Length: 201
Length: 275
Image 1 (cartoon, rainbow over the protein chains, first blue to last red):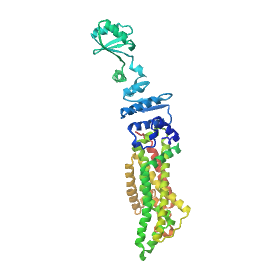
Image 2 (cartoon, helix red, strand yellow):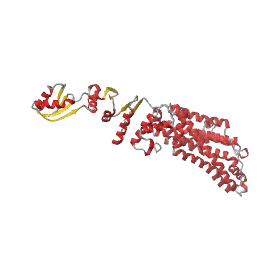
Image 3 (cartoon, rainbow over the protein chains, first blue to last red):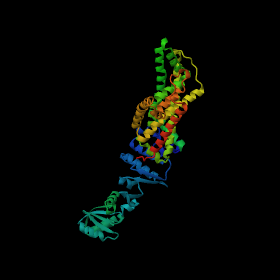
């Protein structure tokens, strides 16, 4: 690939070094593991030092170690002026490596924004008894913007740093609190919401 | 870019085991058909006074001074199939392994890559012919004692002309293989179609053309008959048994035309989308 583009052998060594394959550079392709083959593909794409790198399912078929390696490389290559577009159905992976996310369905972009924007605000999930009293008490707490009962799990839209205050107020209202944990919608939840919405159909 | 494509294609060709196998096969065909078979025939007619003319013909063929004639003649008869397979391997491999997509992704344009591929094929064919033209005099020298032939080297211009003619003959076949592989996007289909054409259609039509003059025009553009006609131009006059079916200019034009047509067909086939 370097020769097609008139690039010197030194550039090949640089990109192989960048993906951790310099020592295996002289070995036959068939002796490479799947992860190494993927890294070789990325090295090939980096030969011309592109401003934009498009990766389609780069961790497809890789073992957990290989996936972690590729994710680390993607983060590394995305630093600086280069933009990396990652196309993937593994939303956990997208969540881990992306700054901005776009959700597409049937060829249309449904939503695009930072990962935090798409996942929405953080909050608290409280398991307590009695539930109705807990919902009522939580709604009265200053800083709470919404309370929902999700099959017994009370989702409170509030800054998670206020967990202690929320606990105190609920106990003071006569509520028995079993568990308080932080929540934020995963990309998978956002994706499913968007792709199953009327907008997507 | 063209130079880059040529260097890239040359590297790929060099790394393929098939290249070395086909190159060795080309040399083996020349040595076996020109010299091993020639020696067997020579032994057969030795001492048979009724076949003195045949003995002289075989002995002349085995002489070092005629190694380029013997090499060219054998390559024109049997080298075509090997060159066709080689051309099919060069172009077909890219489609089989889907590497053509990877190449285009880095932006060398299609015609540049194809030109590099054809040039690298030409360079490889030149290496095949060179190896054959090194092995041929070596075999001739080895046989000079047993057959009682003098060791006299041919003229340099004669060898260069023979080399050029052998290259053109094999290149016409290799370019055909390359074009067939580009059209079929496969090695097996290209080799199958090419060999059927080479062994069946050209030979059958050429045979019929001797009886039906309407087929003469078709025969005049075939690669095989023109390759043999070109090789026959190099045979010393004293040894010519049948005059060549076409002159050197027509043979060269037909073979160059075959290379050009194959290049155009390949270029058109490469315009298609790659999946």
